[in-house]
Image (cartoon, rainbow, N blue to C red):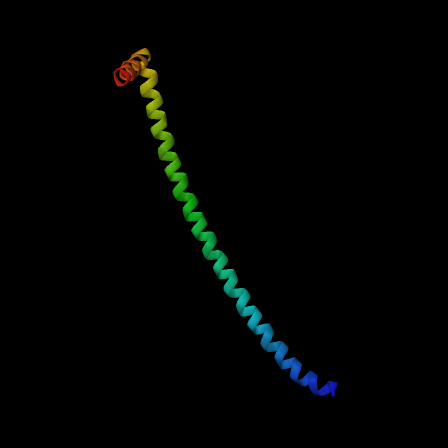
Length: 83
C-alpha cells in the first residue's frame, strides 16, 4: 500500500517543485522591478534636492550680498502690509 503511494508522490513532488521554482523566479523578477523603480525614484529625488540646494545657495548669496538693505526692505514691506 505504501509502495503504491510512493509512485504517486514522487511525480507529484517533482511537479510541485517545478511550480514552486517558477513562482520563486516570478517573485525574484518582481523584486528586481521594484528595486529598479526605487533606484530611479531615488535618482530623481537626488537631482531635485541638488537643484533646490543650488537655489538656496543663490538666495543666501543674494541676502548676504545686500546685507542690511534687505532687512530694511522686509521691515518696510511688513509695515506697509500692517498699516
